[in-house]
Length: 282
Image 1 (cartoon, one colour):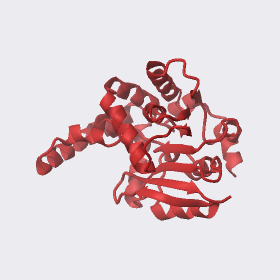
Image 2: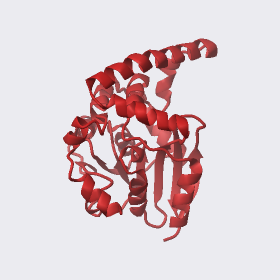
Image 3: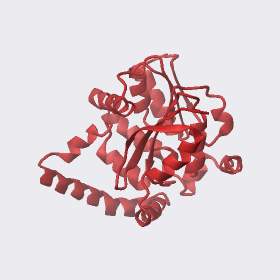
Image 4: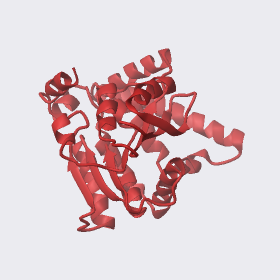
């Protein structure tokens, strides 16, 4: 079933998916985000990895970044001492990651960046083995989330770590957001209408929260993994394909495959549930 999906999916190019309104151009959003990247944001990203993995560094570790996006977390892992292999399906995201490698680790043989898909079994068989398989907020945007999770998990050997973040299932609200995201990606009119409605709404909601909490929520947002609130708003609005899962569904899918849950950060809202699993048996 998975291989059949891969063969069908490979018949379409990335550009065709964009043209047909089947995919958001995450890479273009990340290209804009990199203009605001600072040393502070990079350090926050490093700390977020250390906190979830409960480690002080990644020295001597091999890390696979599935869906590297802006390249920020590949950079963070490399700064923490890991050998990093980054890949993404979006050509612009690959370009972002390569740009960060050139800026911070020029000519580095311990940081590989390439184009690839987590749904491509032949590609995955060529990447090698890793101590940490990392995919934050990516697998639910592939168009076949469960196949993507299974493929990512299949790369883990005994004692390897799988760190993933998957959008929380909110039932009817999630179904509504799926329709909104699909409309956003349908073309210029969809993007214009959706942005006109929701960006002011997000802004007002954050402003009100700032007043209630007596702190600047816009500035505080970057403490969330070093990200940018405005870029994340557009990432959320346009993030299609879009799938969701409950904490229980993710656990019940991976636990029978020999994975033990070591850390979790869950949400009751529309954000992501973050999981750190360790493969304890084959």
